[in-house]
Image 1 (cartoon, rainbow, N blue to C red):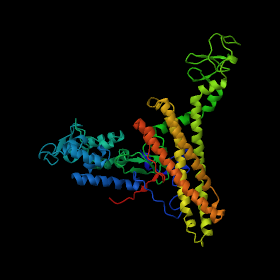
Image 2 (cartoon, one colour; image 1 turned 120 degrees about the vertical axis):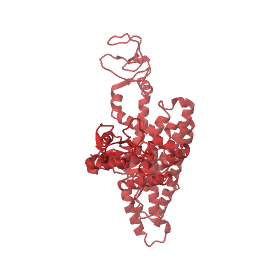
Image 3 (cartoon, one colour; image 1 turned 45 degrees about the vertical axis):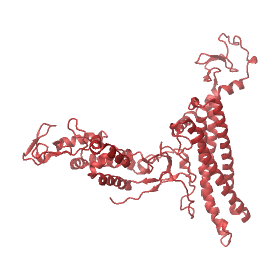
Image 4 (cartoon, helix red, strand yellow; image 1 turned 60 degrees about the horizontal axis):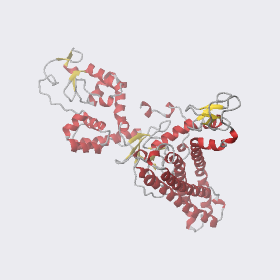
Length: 544
């Protein structure tokens, strides 16, 4: 956690190889094309970027709300917020439901009323007090009493604080007294530590500030590497399942902090990513050096000269043709077996390697569209030059439609990048949805086949229109006559609408007809946003 505020020089840069490093969904930054962005009707979560400077400000705002509502000191408000994971609305709801006393006791907030002259009263007349921890008489001015009423010497308190902070318990340092659940006053902790242990005191302060991010389900660190030092807050109390873009340019899934991957669920994407890393390096070797068992389909490697091989399941088979055989054999023959009388090797291999080939089928299409996406991202580098040439050529032309060509191009690129990304991740989704063991028990073979055909038909329609849109955007329209430019403009406009509608329908199909019909809550997906992933707005730091 200490590294989050380090500079970029403190990290070793690494190539993550993600799509997000090559482009972003919006196609252009707002200042790359001097036009207004199309208005989006998306009403999902509002994302804010919390920088190091603004972190204290947003934390103070939540503290202020609780302090004013419940008439509390800042220390007690912070203890309650940390206990409720900085969810102010949940805190207020529990206050109404449980009452002040029960909620305070559960969170460790205690305000002790001591009797004047008692040993807990720091104003009693004795010049020294015996500390119950170290059993030594200590001057009264070196005794500290907490809100809970327990008093111990400053040295014992300091040692207790240092141990707890080094153990990572600085957000919940409880009183030393036996069975006391009270949280120690942060101002007391800070004052005692800053006398001789400045480094530990600063660590304590940093833990308190960063608890707003570490404990808050609506706030997450940006997963950029090297770390940009920002955190993202999603202001949606109901559902934090969404995809956001940090001001550093990284786009990621707020649910799992990996790269944006809808329409894959977080679980699907995690398994797919690990599968790609594990299998991509071995697929060629397995295909070239093994043959599938005709009984269990597991790949078997031949480790001897005999053509009779045996699988771990116990099934013997002929290495030459792949057919199941008996066990008796010589160097030249196998009892009861002749390769000419059995099914050809190609048919057996096709059935046996079905799982492997199925993975390769979906992986190849996923990778092909990922590569296309990276190549298409270069369009924005040349698009502005072509738009500038066209606008200069038509500067004195009164033909209004040509003047908004840059707007059409930007909108077309936005839809192209967004829809290509959806198409890329639809293949991992289909891999898990229509095969394997993830949904086997939830769908019959007939139902799976029907749904797969419908989904693949949507994929094909989306792919065809994406390719057409990409082709028109790659045209050198700055060299064409006005009539041809108008034709391309109309095609880009129409295709942008078509691919957006197809993406919307694909998400509706997944949410309602596929995952929704199975009532599978572990595979929820981030909602579709036609204008691209939401770019978080930067929260300005303000004085507390």
